[in-house]
Image (cartoon, rainbow, N blue to C red; front, side, top):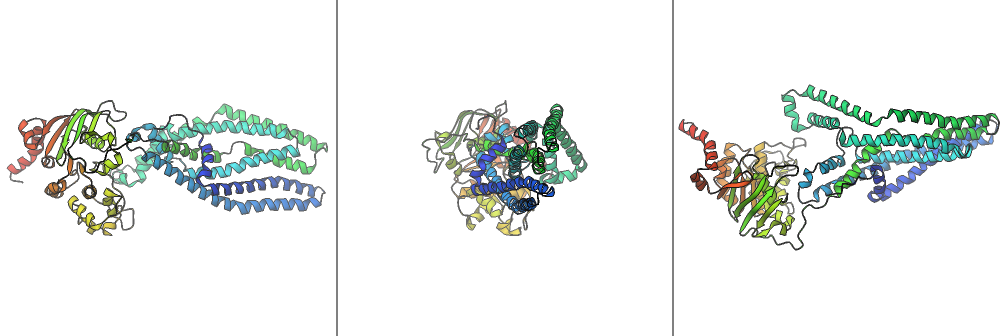
Length: 603
């Protein structure tokens, strides 16, 4: 996990990273910025020359026009080039930030870090999502505007010292820089609030997503939530922005800044006017000094440029935090071979576990044995820890206590990547990839090319074969209505597809099949078909079946009943019925409606 020390300023971190992300583009942008600054310097000099010409120095008009033309050419020619380079560099920064975030989030082989609120916040901020957020590329654009502005301010200070007096840029420049620093601090506080401390903006972002994403579209319209969403979003957004403004505006400092700038300008304008009236300052130098004095504003607050820079660059340190995540499960120095495992058994030995942030353990010194090549069904109430067993077996979490043994050796002695190749899992909340059918099933063995014959076999066993023929492009149909020639599947069709994906993994060497509620969304016919194929599916495979449906559970070789984080009953279906314990009571409750229907002649 990353250290919890504070991250450096996002803008400074972005400046340091730009040469590493795209060195050539950064150098080109730097050269273009220097050209822009040169144009800004030439403008007051051109004004001075033209004033000199108008007051009788005729030769000065040509020099003045030449300087003015050079300034305009630099601005007209370089500006579109600078915009193009800035856009390309911004795209490179977006890509580098996203890649760093993805690599960091995927580096831990477990998933416990995703339950850490600090890590979750950093990932969200690195993704630059939320109301009013800017992607990192906007920080590059702001930086490309802010750097020449600051350099132009320095150049104006030099010109003011040359045309007026050496102390003038020190006085007026200090006033601008001090007031700018005050406002800079306010911006940083606002950005911090905007990044996660203002609950109203988070609520507004959530309500916005409800209104525009397909997942909630049906219920939003069914329940008539249109007005409620609009009103809720508006209320939360304005409340959040009001809080930000309250955070960012210090009325005392604001008044002091205005007074300080008035004093600074008076301290410069007074002597310039006195010297010009006394004939001690030429019209040319007076014009240059006045132009330079106005140009010193570039050393102060830059408004939207600074706000955008700090808001958009906030993703940079967040991405660095995520990118610094370390593996939470240490790899063994000499990992054991996993090929052909398990040959004897999988054993949970006094395993205890609680999810991060929870106070109650899900598993409490659990003992459970699954002989290799057999099938085990796990039943119990919601929250009993059935799905947790699958996550621990896959190494997604580490037990807080006890051991998981594979053929007598701790799971920690095996390389997790290799061990996971031995697993084929259908989680209850399996992912519905909006990709072609071929890829959705082929992900079961992503490291091997998808072969049509194996695809068909896995789809047949999973009950999906034949569904693809009804789709617009068959196996190559994207499974999302948002794509051209794409298609949406029903819940039951998706579950068949997920099962086919797991069985495709079995066809490519997985020896342990874990099915978490595999029939939850299947209709009666599909469920019956799965029962008929169960023995074929699980033949010679070590299988764990988590289900609430006892028609499926009774097909397993052994059944374990979980209660209070432990196994309360263990045996075959017939043995557990004969014991007349909790399993028998649950079985009778679930079977009663069907028995009543048969008795009434409605079977």
